[in-house]
Length: 339
Image (cartoon, rainbow, N blue to C red; front, side, top):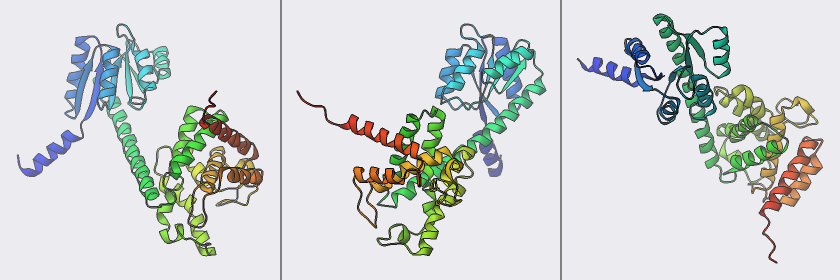
């Protein structure tokens, strides 16, 4: 084998997908193994019980699971639901293998979170096509995850270069999530809010440090450049998988309730709820942090400014709830009285 052939073979091995086969019948496992290995591009792992499948799926990089519905003990439908509830395995595509795969079986399988349901005995070609299709989708999702990780890393680098705003995004995220919890947002919505908070300033990477760290007032042109930051942040984050949910939050964080904000001069409820929340959290942290052009304000002064701008710059109801959150946090951090 020449060097090029060796490199091609090595590359092929590196790109092989790992498939977990979960079935308590040795004959079924052998049949699936023979079909999949004939393709020459899959690595296989095997389990006979749901508990073993959980362990293998959590501790190894599994790209797809073929899961029998009639496992002893915990059946395949229940195992599928558990795998989809686990953060480590929720994105792994699952094909359930049912005895009949009639409409009732398919509905039950899809409700359990499976991507597909095949009946037994299954057709070899159909199995190969279903597996190949789901693995292709999984690969695309993995690539999007890699893009998200790169963007998040870029956000950290951007923040680290600005001595005045280090840890700003983490604090803003904490305030925003606390306010989201206060008003009853779901866990998923709070997770998206946290992600948007971490990324809302990433557009500063395209702004000169001379402008960001300028000790005096900005010129009209410098102000225009700074105001493009939220739009640039949204553009940088556009390739991310969570884009549809977080882009409006990032783009509209500097909109004002009375329409005087930017970039689109939205008014009132036209501003996405996440952006209204993040705008308050961002403003409070900016006020209480030292900046090149002014020292940090006291928490009391910052609260007074928020109250004064409620109904004009910020959503009044959200400001009231945010001040309640701050009061609770202050109460929790207050030293206990000694009798």
